Image 1 (cartoon, helix red, strand yellow):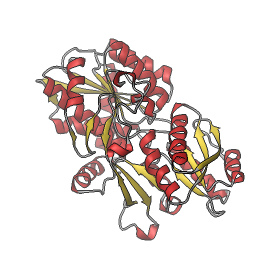
Image 2 (image 1 turned 135 degrees about the vertical axis):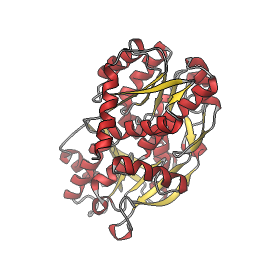
Image 3 (image 1 turned 90 degrees about the horizontal axis):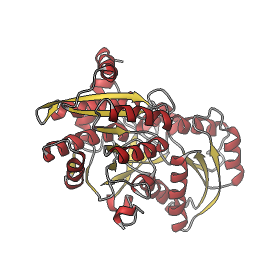
Image 4 (image 1 turned 45 degrees about the horizontal axis):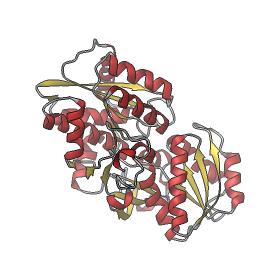
Length: 396
């Protein structure tokens, strides 16, 4: 890792101990930096937020922009404790990234109570802008419904009409299984069963044996991060794909594909909201990020860049960091940056196109990080619920 990157990360950590100031704008990155999702988001998202602040110019309304960061360790109670201190003592104005749906849902409630803005990027549950929506909460890069429409819909239409789920045993897994089940059954498929798998499992053998014995055509991995890569590696040991079943990584990003390697990941179909090699704009951002970190960004990293930049644009447009005024501007301003072109709905959902990819064979990859073939573009209004469809009480 480059020394400059480590030094920058250290600066972010130091800011946590500095005395609070009501001056300027303070943004918090709260995510998993040491556990199962550390590669998926982690310090890589922190660096993306730092890029957004630099690109914006480092200050807004004549005041310095500060970045603070902390590791919630995938524990909602710890996350709430950190966020409460940030809001009450350290004058943090907005919290973003928020990997892990149980954490994001808890912070959503706290932000509502404190009248502070949160912009969820790393967590997936569509409930965040559905029944759990709140006036100051936003959801940015993707959600479980978009993943289900992309990957689930494509595989059913391709003949994968029977499914068995390995589901992460918390809010995210339940939401992803439910949303994918709805898409599968709406397209004439059926679900033969599912099994709940504890977060951060090391041994998937008993769960994979159940999936194998179900004879389902598709084994849906309703998990993420290291849980996904470990289940794929262990599925190979059991000969699941060799035996004729297909694996569906329902939430996979470039980070997990890189961790697996093309030899293991080839042929997987997945849905992301961003890929560095989509167009000139994404390539330029990807190359800049690569120079800083030694890796290409996933949709979580690029999404954190976008959420941070969009918040700062809204503060500038509002002429104040007052929560009500900035919330209004976030919902008015179009999103147009390296991550996506999109719009923010009344319920806080940022709507943009999603992309269905197939992971290349090693022989098809021409250079490092050349991992995806684009199969289809899913228009934003198909990928995401409308505000009225979402179940958000404020939009009924």
